[in-house]
Length: 68
Image (cartoon, rainbow, N blue to C red):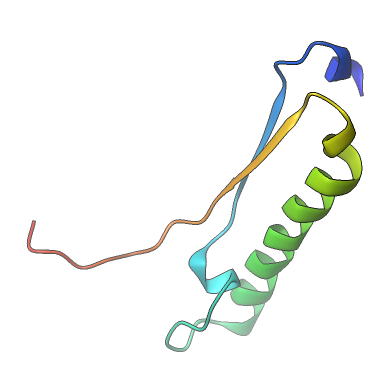
């Protein structure tokens, strides 16, 4: 990778809470895809980016009902 020596590079992935736990009847393909994104982020962090200065982050939004 080109930016490995710079120290300020980052990779960001977007997943979903549906990839980490059961949510009432999500489509199987959606949940499977999001779970694979979670595992992809973990693997790249440990195997590839853990030895460099590249950060690997993932966000997993969840929908919540509120009074606002």
